[in-house]
Each structure stands twice: as structure tokens, then as C-alpha cells.
Image (cartoon, rainbow, N blue to C red; front, side, top):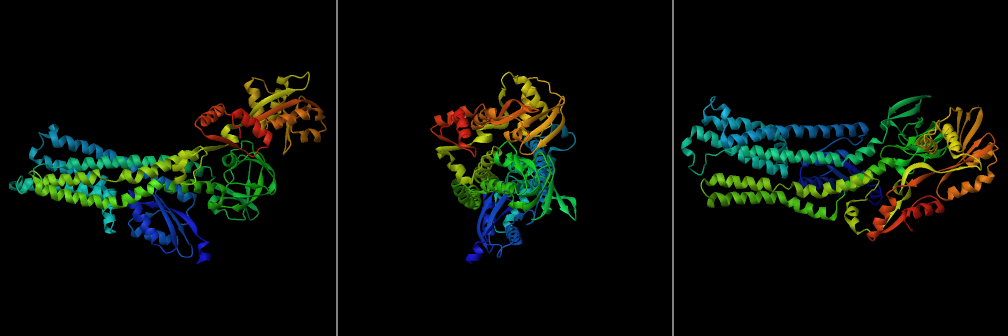
Length: 614
């Protein structure tokens, strides 16, 4: 058993049919009874159940059967991939649209019923006797009750068949009582009028009450569904970072296949500008890869044979082949998505209390409604039955525990989702709840304190040289480059309205820089190693370059033929608001610490500008 415990896995099951906190309790109870399941967390806002289980003892089919026996459904399959996720997204979109259509229809008819119940329909007075008004109201209310309100019947009474009750049970019971009573009164008034106002019956019908209740509850469900859709956008945006296809080497040629069909050990080809479909290791080729979506670093990372690469990062320059080492749910991006899903699906301590209360709430409400009916039936004014039924309807409808089950998980979903959009990840809901007790804030440098995009900070021409000429020459050569450092130089020249010259023979030298010809002269822009390889005497300028590097900048040496023109410093500059934010955090009594993988001089230079002292 100890060996089996080591193989515990976790799966997120998309659950369909949950409407309130009582449903959460029912689904959790059903899954906990499956042999091999060690823990279950069900989240109403995300409509998912996180299950930890032993694969040798429990399977996806076991979970599906257990949930179905409880009156709900598991969407998707165990091997569901991108196509299935897209289908689930489309299904939810259609669900929101269907709710919208039913809400508009129910609201429109409910308004007519409300007006007809009080003042009648003057425009039909000449077409029918007013004695038939109740039948007209009945005809209008029926499609609202059984079409627009069909979800309440299928879910509410369906749960009763499984020995449970939920929010929809209360709505279905309340509206059915109002609708059924109104039908009975309409028929009695027509065929047994002597019973009206006798034996506790009143002549008033409540078709409008049933329709208005359904319209309002549908409106709430529609707004709730839209809110769920918006708050899950953070995960969808992360998912959208993944490409849908991959170029795989098979049978000596390239074959484009869905990313779900990529297997461990497959050799893939990536060209400039493409996103990597899976994690892997470079086998052949050289390129620079933009990994900012993972690390926040704006400058692409050079990749050669043996270098690790990650799914959803962007290949910027060359082409290369790599071997798939992690696919599907094992990729770095998938782990980030799982982190957000786990946080959104986890329960804060206060939510656990709400779930306990809600699990007893529906049966308690039903008991209170029945008690209220009995009391008003015997002690209420005449017509007693009418008053008793309306009191019961009021208790059933007003006590629907929607907010009790949704408020906390929706708040968690919004908080973790908005955080993920801004690069802030919460381990779980408890961490979010305890965030107000934070006394130390640790900030990453690149992309958090800094802008995340390099820009020109220094232009130093050789003695007697011209800065604009230096920038013009460097930008003209770099105009053929896709490297962010080169783009920063071009952007600076364009910002100064400096015209670019026509460059020919452009050549990118990985790890060194670039070169091209301007007016028959060879111009090189790159690091000191490039200058040395070309025989350019740049040693006397090296001290300046070292000083730039120590202050967190990248020195770009510019040479024409065999002599230097100067050095351009490029860096990821501090955001305009960073110093202000750090100051505000410190004024709140928080200790601010900067975290970075850069060298100490660079880190200290940025920290000093931001006002961080540690």
C-alpha cells in the first residue's frame, strides 16, 4: 500500500449540472466514495473537481459513473486535449447565449403577465370576454414555465430522484406551486365557480409571480455564467499561448501534426517567428528564443545544441531541431496553468465554513417552507390556502442559497485570475486569504521593476566623432536584425528622426553581433569578441564597455572597417512608476526586496534607482 501511495495522481474533472453549494457537497460525497480516492475539492465557480487518487484503484470511468449516480455529469474524456478544451469553451459560450435568449423571453412574457394581472389587456377587450383572461395568462405563462424554466425542472427534480436537493429544487418547487395553483383556480373558476372564495380558495391567479421568479433567477444565472466566463479568461489566455500544431520529422520528412499527437522523443523543427509546441532539448542549429512569457526577461536566450527549450516560447532568429522531452501536461506552461487552476479550485478556510452551512441549507429551507405553509393554512386570514401557498413560495425562492455557495469561490477565482494575468501566482486560496498579513514584498527585476523592453541609454562616440553619425551607422546595419538589442537602436534612431542608410550584405553572427556594408565599407555592431575576431582595435574602449556592463547595460561596439566609431549602451530601463510604487509599499510598513539573476553591480544599480535597499 505504501508503494501505491507514492503513485498518487491528481486530475481536474469538469463537472456539469452544479448550481449551488449543496451540489458541491453532493459531488464531493460521490467522488469520495470511489475506492482509491484520497481527497476531493469541488469548486462551484470553476465547475471543476480536483481529485487525488491512486491510478491502480480508480479510473476516469469510475469518477464519471460516481458523478452520474449523484445526478451530475463529467464533461470530456481522460485523454482530452486542445480540441476537447476548445469544444468545452464553445459549449460554455453557447450555454451563455442560450441563457440570454431564455432570460429575454421570460422577462418579456413576465412583464406582459404582470400588466395583464393588474389592468388586463385593453387591446384585446374587443376580441374576447374578460372571463377568458386567466386562460390567456395561462397560455402565456406555460412556455416560460416549461421552456425557459426547463433547467430548474431537469436539475431540481432530477436531484430529488437521487435523494438530494439543490437550489434549482427550491426554484422548481416554488414556481410549480404558484403555476399549479393558478391553473387549478383558472379551471375551478370556469367549471366549479361555486368553490371560489369557499373552502379556502381565492379567485386570484399567480401566473405572473411564477414567470417573474423564473425571469429573475434566469437573469442571475446569466450574469453568473458571464462572470465565470470572464474570470476564467486568465487560464484561457495562458492556454492560447500554446500553438495548435507542431512540425515533426517523420519518415525522413517534415509532417505538421496537432500538438496533442507529439510524443516523447519526437524530433521537431522550428523556424523563425514560430512558437515552440512542447518542451525539449536542441539537437541541431542555433537561434535566440524569447522566453519572456516564462521568465519575464526581455532579451532572447541563445540556444545551441544541448540547450533546453520550452513550450509557448518564441523562436526569433534561426531555425533548429529539438527533441521533445516533455509533452502535454508535463510542459512548463502546463504546470503554470495547473498552478492557476489549483489555486482557483482550492478552498479558503472561510469557504469551508460556508460549504458546511450550505450543505444543510436546502433541506432546512424546505422544512421551514413546509412549516410556514402549515401555520398560515390554519392561522392565516381568508382565503387561507392562497396565503399559505404564497408564503411557502416566498420562503422557497428568497432562501435560494446562490450567494452562499458562489460568493467565496468567485472572489477566489477573480483574485487568482487577475493575479495570473499580471504574473502574480497564488499557491492556493489560503495564501490569497492571508495576503493581508504580508510584511515582506519581493519584486523581480526584469519586467516588474523594469519595462521588460531594452532601450538605448548611452551613446558614446570616439573623440572627435559624432553621436548622430554613430547612431545612424549602427541603426542602418541593425535594421536587418530581429534581435531586441538591435531593434532598440533602430527605434532610438527613428525617435531622433535620423535617416537610415541602405545596407547590403547583412550577416548575423550568433553570439557576436551583426555586420553589413554601407557605401562600400564594412560596418560591425556587436560585443568585444566580435571586435577582436575582426581585428578591430577596441581595447582602449573596453573600460567604458565594462563600466556600462557593471551598471546593468549591454555595450554594443560599433566599428567601420578596422577602426572604432563608438559604443552604444542598451538596457532594460526602470518603469516610470517603479520608484513611486516602491515608496508607497515602504510607506505602508512593508519591507521591499528585489530578486534577480543578474550580477550584483547590475542589481545594485537598478535597486538604487528604484529605491530598494535589499
